Length: 611
Image: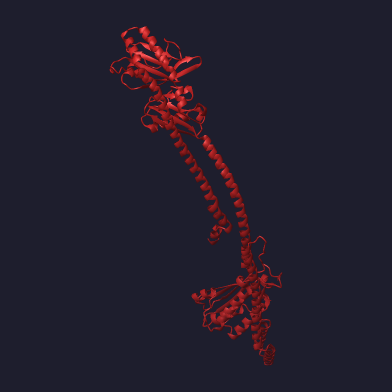
């Protein structure tokens, strides 16, 4: 679990790059996007405000212009001479003369306004008098047949009240390849001497070009223009004549729904497909028309998009340059730290000869740390060497002190004298015991800290067991089994003696049944496996648990102390590769498992000892 947790940790380089990404690049991108959308919204709102203001202005201009044409209408239906002539026609007095005079009067009004194409009067008795600029005829009207009303219906519609009636654009006479489109203003003729007297109506026909010129310029149709729709949803004025009089929407009193209908109509036009179009409208209460504005936002959006692209390119180049600088600095820093960390890991595994190599690109702080770490490794190496030398000197001194306690030559000579005395007395059993003791002492005292073969240790162990059996009058039996492959393997002297002695002195103490001791030495997978078994009284479970953990309670028992010293020696010689495990069942047995690595002496492995 710890290894997995370490793998999930981020390196310093990753953290720095992530911090740079979070604190620099992402906020800049977010701010840029926010700025773009905010600017787009501001521009769109500004364009919308300007468009609405222009529509209001167009509506005002339209009202002013149409009011000027209403003045012409007013001059006709209130003129006393015209009223008198119409009254004569209705009574049938001098009809031809009255019609001619009326036509000349109407003709004189044409010069006052540019876009008037026809002025027509329908009298109460059904007489039609007009002056038509398009036909130039006194008998043929350019529009009367196309307005969608009969003369009687038209008369009834206009004369029903005293209001000005507006009739939407309709096609008039076609002259050559050109069709003229006219809209009409109508009013009943009023005789102010008798306002209820029915005389007739007057219709002023105006060219649709007037509406187009007031509302929208045909030169800018590609990007923005206005058109007019009447209360029936039909087109009154449009920059292109093909759409005039055609239905645009289903008229609805809700202005928002009408505006949505205009949006759908415009989006269906070929010229605005796949383009961003803004549609706005205002309603002219006077004429009950909608003035609609169409604005293509593509140019504005393209400029904003181009500006955004330029900004993104500049931003990308700037961020790339900044990122390159950051990565270079981070790589310089983290590379130095990674080298330092690798050296620390190697040193942590025990190799104190490694050193951190300083580089010119290394930051001064890391260089200082590296230098101090190198010095620390040097001091630590010297300290370990001195400690090792001191330990070896102390061990040699302790052994020398033990050896100095008894003069070996005196001891050997004395035992030799006693041996010969026993032979003279023909006490051969005593002689054998003395001879075995002399060999044991000589083996133990001579280079007691040395390394011998398993074969040599086995021979010494046999002599030691012989003396113990003699001392205890053969109270126990013993066996030593050594694999042939293990005979020439090397082992430190006297490592097994404390365990064997503990089994004999402690294990067999007070035992009534036949006592048995066995020592088995085998070679397995590069290790010496040694098992010392006895069927003595055993060791308590809590005691074996403590001993297996390296805990030895304080005791004055010499054998107990000997086992502790033997385990300590083993750890000093073999480190963590040497291992001792004790298992025991009180009243049944004790079994000691010892595992020792093969010893390489003078840097060479014993060729006669191999697994």
